Image (tube, rainbow, N blue to C red):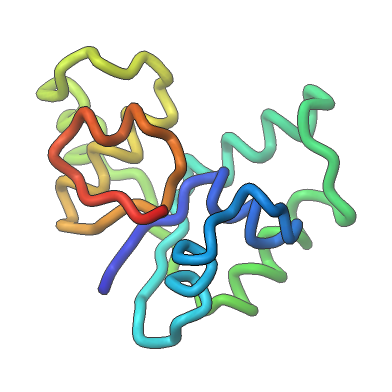
Amino acid sequence: MNALLDAQGLLYYALNDPRLTKSAARFIADPANQLYLSTVTIWEIVIKAQSGKLKLHHPVEPFVDLYTRNLGLIQLDISRRHILSVSALPLRHTDPFDRLLIAQAASEGFAIVTGDEKFDLYSVQTIW
């Protein structure tokens, strides 16, 4: 299955956070699943790290590179189509990063690995 990892899914997995569900951890670790990392998620991690809201054991770039390599993540860049797809989403979730992830997942036919219940308000499959 193809799925986007949101920041929460990637960080909880990487930091061995007990809030990551067993089913989400199994999904992430399963080599049969193709995982994607959106550039919007990388941007969100950079902002959280710079603001002090996120403490990593590595600087952001080596952290992202390490988990991209270890998990075999494919980078999904933000396209014009993704951005314009946001305009078709009902305003049920106001976080711009999450709205763009939802638009990307819907455009690409991907699920999203996230524990954010607001994603369930949209027609994308979530894994948690």
